[in-house]
Length: 360
Ligand code: DAH
Image (cartoon, rainbow, N blue to C red; front, side, top):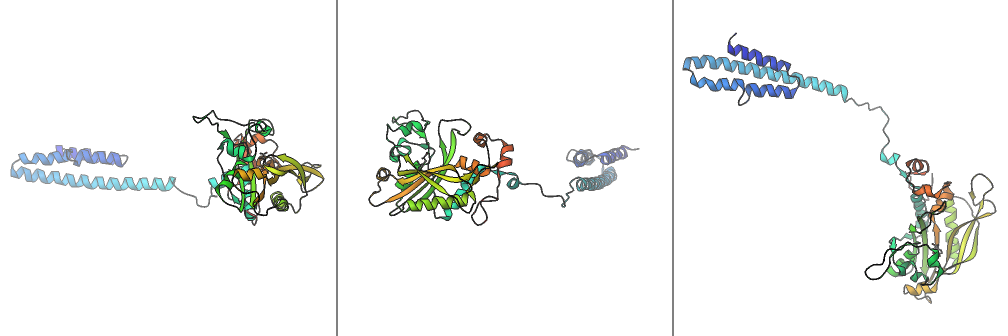
């Protein structure tokens, strides 16, 4: 066998045994690339005399053609095999059930659900949503709400204070949503109808208290809002929220610095069975504090008490959520335990609405 035939046989054998396209490409470069064996042979032809050059040149070029064709052939075969492999492994069974996406797997926390329910109810009555910062100052959280420096309510609130700032002021974590009343009245003119749901903070921790919890504040200010309106708003709310036809309410005289008169509201319930039933029975359940906005509060936000009046209420959201959905321990609310959330949470796409149903 001459050197040319040996070279050809050698290359063809490498072509045949190339296991994939990368290996085949390496064979091609080694044979036909710029410095490949066949290319080098062609370059060497220059040193031969014309007759030898013609003869050997012809032979080398035929080898080059055959090798080229063999490589092309092998490449087609490898591609075919690869395609077969992918068709076999990447098969998709379109009849399989659809896997649960995040919208189905995720859950809405009961507190968020209850806030959405409250929002749906009060929005339907013409209330809008107001918000305020969690980090408040003394004025909005206390002073403007008619809670002066020496007032016992300041101590009762178990306030978290920040260290004194450069200006000598100490900011605090708001202890209730009532400062949003102040911000709203300072920010716009009556008529005002808002609710303000959100987080509040007090230094307290046991089975029924956590240092962070949620309240919703309500505020109505205009020239003639009165206790009758307050009573109607709260009664409508209770019926819609607890999803019952009727609920009895008891207004007990109480005291809050920011309202005069002040009341605490109980609704009737039945505790005789396993679960608490709202709107049935003769037991009472306290659910909120309320009253007519104190003239000193109106003056603090530059509203004339001779012209404007209104009512306000404040309610704890977490406890109401526990009552409505039968969750026994408040601390589990904020333990971020996924098993709890999967059990008590709500489907993400079931947005509460009065028309569609609050809770399904
Ligand atoms: N801010 C009160 C609290 O945290 C709740 C409250 C009571 C709010 C009466 C009000 C109200 O607006 O009128 O205990």
